[in-house]
Length: 89
Image (cartoon, rainbow, N blue to C red):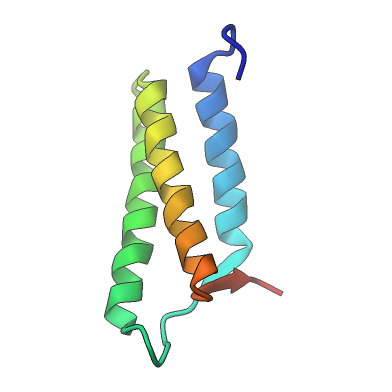
């Protein structure tokens, strides 16, 4: 990110990229080692962070928006690393 980059524009691109990645994945809710309720808690949290990111961007708080979308992406990554989210076919 350059020093001249607009945080609001960066947040918008990041959110769009994450939404695209989220739409291309399916979060698995049943696993023998992980309780479905625990997976749902993480899935719900990542959707709340996405909603927060949009809210903060719309309310001229792009830096907070970037933090929120980064949390959402981290949770989706964690689910994928654990084999609990996979790309849609």
